[in-house]
Length: 267
Image (cartoon, rainbow, N blue to C red; front, side, top):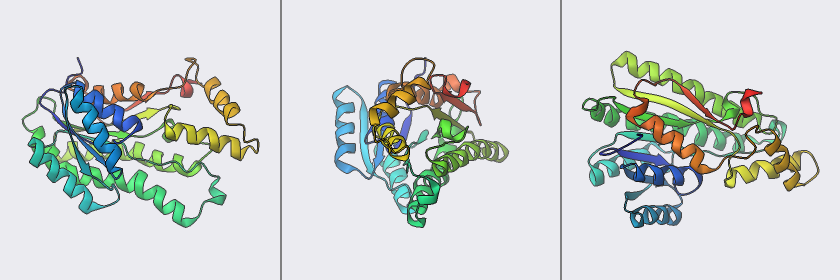
């Protein structure tokens, strides 16, 4: 189940957090993984950890806001592993500020990483994914990291919610566009709740600051209460969902959004 044997995957923002966990889980499932990130040292450490566990991984410097950088990462996947079957558009940032306090420079950076990065990744990887998809039973796969903030509004960061809402609809639209072209590329999104990562910790700090309490532990407790399952998520919860969406077990899924949020949006 959920095997990726013979597949080559490129994961953006894979040096740490959900991206790193996804890369490790994909390697365990049999994929050869390209760790794409601007954090070279941490990305190489992730690749080494995968190799130490018996998997296959390599590093490719990847600035998701740069078309040339994406071209280089795709070329590296082809040179080192023979092609590309899976793209995980994982890289993203969170501002955690009231939109009235956000500068145009901050907004432009948010959009560049959270939205332009997904567009460029999809555009630059699509030709190779389509080529490899011809010989695959269920085609190639793209998994986009959205968020529950791309389904419901965000009190903490409306602009983050805007970008993730864009990713949500781009996922559906690009799935339809590839289908119309006859390109065998499935495109799905995954929508995490609050996850115990560096970004998750940033949400607690932002909530505390915006409430004027600076009580980070209290903010974490509030977030915990919003998850009926009784805990916050961990990167492995999301990584396992991504592996499923990338595998042939999800072969009849495209244009879909998988919510992995501990019941947060069920309320």
